[in-house]
Amino acid sequence: MELMVASKTTTQFKQKFTIIEELKGVTIMGTLCGLCSHPLPELCRTSDKTGQTYPGYCNQYCFTAFRQGIREKVPLRNYSDHARLNGHMVWPYINIPCGWCSANKIEIKHNHFGRSNRVFCSRNCYKEMCTEGGRRAFARFLILRNMALNPTKRFTASQLSALLEPYGSIGGSLNGRAVASILRVYVARGTVRALGDSTSTKEYQIASSIVNSPTPLGKYV
Image (cartoon, rainbow, N blue to C red; front, side):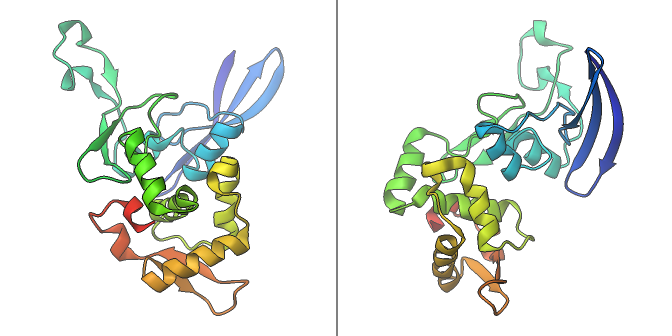
């Protein structure tokens, strides 16, 4: 298999790479991750969720690292005292807050499987959020989280509904009208801003006070 870089475009928050993959004489166009240049997977249930939440990136790690200004690997000895690891280069480890508790941080590392997409520090935190948040708590968390990851972006209820589709029943299977109903509650609380007059064209944006708050996002569910 031979890979040739065909084009490369850089924007403020993401880089897109296009490659031509020649396999047995067949040319296939693909897209590379904006941080590590790893080929992004074909759409499937798992990658579709990642693709919508972190467009242009492998996973949460690459998305977060790029926004933090990380562009290259560092020596593994920064994280390990084992002499045999000297010379190995790795992407820097990143600590992110848990989506529910304030007690623990989540260490995420660059890899293409496993824990790069962790949002809660433990299964218990996830369960507590779902229990205390009430009906469709996880779906509401996903709505707020997608908005918080893109604090300057305005979403319609239909766009947010589409982001929930890959999660199936876990995401609540909510259509645009149901999502709009949820958002009205958050607008009344001041968690979300509503922009526009018409219901059909109304857009929503996460409140800056929520983005800058030390309170875990799950607490706003």
